[in-house]
Amino acid sequence: MPELNLDGLVGPSHNYAGLSLGNLAATKNAGGVSAPRKAALQGLAKMRLLVSLGVPQGLLLPQRRPNARWLRGFGFEGDDAAVLAACWREDPELLAAAVSASSMWVANAATVSPAADCADGKTHFTVANLVSMPHRSQEWPETMAQLQLAFADPEHFAVHWPVAPGFGDEGAANHMRFAEAPDAPGVEAFVFGAKMGGAFPARQHVRASQAVARSHGVMRAAFVQQADRAIQAGAFHNDVVAVSNGLVLFAHEEAFEDRAGALEQLRARVPGLVLVEAPSADVPLADAISSYVFNAALVTVGDGMALILPKEAEETPSVWRWLQRVQQDPDNPIRHLHVLDLRESMKNGGGPACLRLRVPLSDAALAAVDARFLLDAAKIDRLERLVERWWPEAIAPDDLGKPELWAACGAAHDALLGELGISADELGY
Ligand code: SUG
Image 1 (cartoon, rainbow, N blue to C red):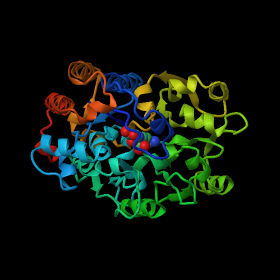
Image 2: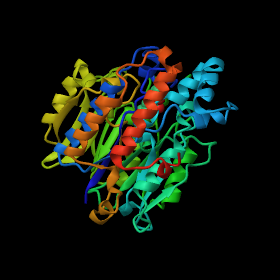
Image 3: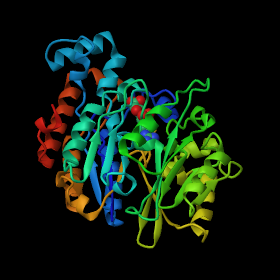
Image 4: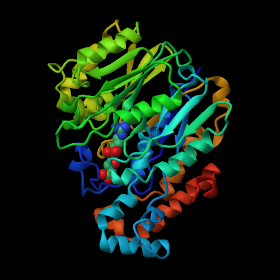
């Protein structure tokens, strides 16, 4: 049984507006000049690597931005250009939110529970409400439309509406799964945060995690609290400090609020759990967070597991030293380290794991996925050419208010829909 890896294609409006409090990279790079074309090509290179490693690969589409429809909900009127111009005049920060390409980080699109974990034997998706950050709260309607299109077959899939907005849900970024194989029954760990007085918000509410587990019919669920210390140090999602694959938990020592309790709970449910943990003494929490080493994509390849790492991990001496030891240690299956330049996304706090949504599927379920969302090397070639032709080369902060940028982003999106054979209608535009 394969695990489908869906990556978010970076949208043409990718920019640095510093919209996410608690996301240190995004805050630090606020006001910088972005390179959308380069960003999308970096993401496509990651997809190409996964294809070459034999991982079934697909994509989710960048959502159409700027989102004039969303701004109409704030009382702006007229055609799209009039809505955007008025918003830029009256509330430029809101306009920046409507331009954000944040839908690229599809680890926040939904939580996925594979069929083997769920009482009804279907693969369940709950679209994340992303209510903690205003710019991300506009994503769920189109995410819902895309998932309903890609996973339309009711024999295999159930796509759920987001959890009620009182309770923040940030999707798979706060969800881990432990299983012998993708199709073996697994234990799902839902990681939540809690308000403990710090300046940075806990974005995943425990009730949202419980709601998702309940509505998916997850038979073996564990609920684990993320360390507030990690959140306050910049780990705004669990996947900044921990990731799982197979029976491996790859994490920082300070990832969980009650480390001993969390490990005891997981070991009791996952007898073969393999813990690959970075001690704080070797890898300080700050290095783990700035390097995004735990935001690696951990994937099963022929003869073991591979970590798809951002360049920042290689450039952080404490992290790179520790990774060499991990790779050589026969007690864990991590054998390969692949380093990628994802700097454009990383500067907004989005590493390799943020850019992908994992969907473990049976062969029959994979065959039921809408093929327009699936990729092979030839299609990646075509997307690269499309990005080179249509994606803007650079966006500076003042460009966000320019009609030429809005038009360029719209034209790029139209070209993408044309290439993939997906109509605006199907996405609810
Ligand atoms: O929600 N950055 C995203 C990064 C999401 C990373 N995802 C995971 N860890 N899975 C966020 O904070 C910045 C956009 C801006 O500021 O313009 C942003 O939304």
